[in-house]
Figure 1 (cartoon, rainbow, N blue to C red):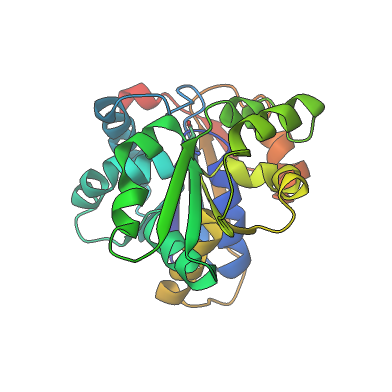
Figure 2 (cartoon, rainbow, N blue to C red; figure 1 turned 45 degrees about the vertical axis):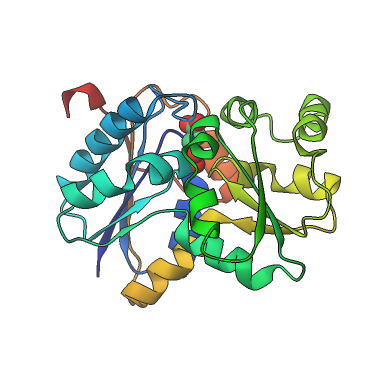
Length: 256
Ligand code: DGL
């Protein structure tokens, strides 16, 4: 049995965790949601790296065997630093496997990526696609994360924002949800774009983790940690993802 450390700025990474638990039910997980400092997606590279390394250090203190960076922003801006700190442990980010999946799925070679401001500005997705002959279009959608954190995942106000952000799509047949908060909005996005293929970065990463670790009999446990009062954390995890949170602790991440 392995122990897998997973982190995000808040509840977004829970969409990744639920995919991981589905595919690797016999393994243990430690989840850290940095809800005291969410959002990461409008912060500078220096700050995102600092936060990501504190989260990594905390997860390593739990003797994890693998780290899943369940945050596209940290994957785009801090993956090299995280790998260095993890010194040889497998580290899975959100970008490489979702780009490979999108390339397999598209039939017309036009792919769009949406994400936080920092993820899109980093050029990480654009760089990854530059090794293919795919035409990639990108857009940052900064209001999606606060909507999700507030638990507003189906609302007329959200529909207006979806139209504002996604009406740029024309020839693209595939859309990467390049932020782990966005899968909570999948139903609303699907309603607006019924024909498009949606790539969920957490699902792509979970497939890769399952290939690397393989199945394990038994039932693993998950420990949850947050850096501020949980507010919507438990409700959203239980009601939207069917996770059962029995083991949640608050920590001061500034000490790490
Ligand atoms: N869920 C994260 C991501 O995948 C970060 C969102 C945020 O904190 O801005 O990018």
